[in-house]
Length: 110
Image 1 (tube, rainbow, N blue to C red):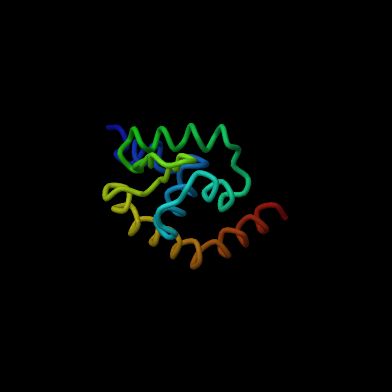
Image 2 (image 1 turned 90 degrees about the vertical axis):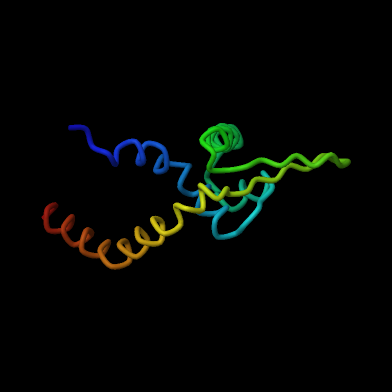
């Protein structure tokens, strides 16, 4: 029997997907440059690729505004927002248990 969690982990928890979804969920609609500033270590190429994939997966929407200069904004979709409780639970787990993980690592390495 295959693990039912694996496809979700592959979809949501890649290195850059989680920070993008977290930012759009908690900070709201963002322009590309705003996302790039908030996720400091991501390159423009990777941000573009991840946003396209998230849009394809239905987790992020892209809105093009016909202005001069043109403006593009990204926003988390209802489907993407449905992940917020999962992120909140993981954040809670991290706060409660990451010190235990660090202690286990120190004990193991000793």
